[in-house]
Image (cartoon, rainbow over all chains, first blue to last red; front, side, top):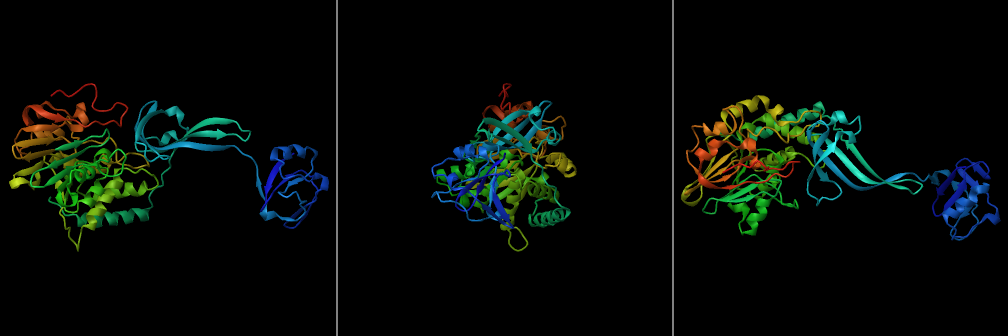
Length: 193
Length: 284
């Protein structure tokens, strides 16, 4: 049984997505049919709604307790499944200064708080993704993010991620523009040579 | 002379008499709001726009160049001096390329500061010639003459001719990091650095910038000591080179370029796992 929360304009309709729900579908419309005794009051919580879905019935949670029988447009329905998500606590943009045998030396700029000073750190190479390691050289940029990983079950776990920045190459057109600009600037700066 | 060394960054502000000020390098206040030189000058009642005559950038490393473009903008009457080894279209092109490639990165390298410096200098240009002359420093160049009774002078002691020649052929390799993410190297050779001798009346000051002591006699401090075009004088004060790093020390500096027991100052560099200066100090 799949439980989905359907969010419409002004109310949340809870449907049991298995075929025991009695619904009439016509083109873009869904017309749920609900027995009067299955109507619930406005103070019913989502948890209690989930528990009542075990018999496969469809229930609604309108604010005013009225029976919901109006058709609902499919393109007005948003199906959201509770998912794992991450809450970012802090993130740094790091520039590699040196690569040693087992670690990288880097300077770190706090992206989440501009007032923090630039810091320097050594990070073990084994902390990086295998596909990122070949990119680690002096000047390489990577991001270090730390935060909380929150499971849909409510479990909270601390997480840390290192991800190297892929830098796009300059196009030949852009290089030509830069070349012309460099020529223009060098002509404007007189020299005492 | 006022030396700023907030842990990361270096800036020297000097009054040469007659209301003439010179600024060597630039760094930001710890909060990162404005260049420390501007904050200092305004705090003592000096108008940077009128009084700063020369701004020197000794080399392109992040800790010596942060806020330089803002300095230039706020000091429209100051001439801008940088190492002659960078006086090439090639260097300008490298700086622009690195800046363009790093636009996606929030904290850009010193290339972006150089790009901004070039734009400020361009904005000073009217018609087809520069209004405020810029100057390139190399061994034996007098980069300032003025002050009280026009007796103050500022001389560049480096880079040497050999350094300039070497840089012209290997600039990209010297300056840029390998790999696809091109930035100015953090630890590139400091041969291109501009060491400075300030002659202010009776007292001479030696500013070592980040110039290092290399094996070859044509580069670094060995080249300075063997130079025949620099003023042969002994300084009373010394801003120790390269944050007190042992590879920037040479006995000849202490024996022939400084008086006995000179006043010395060193700016720290904390952005390393082993910050400078280290446990093996430079003995005066």
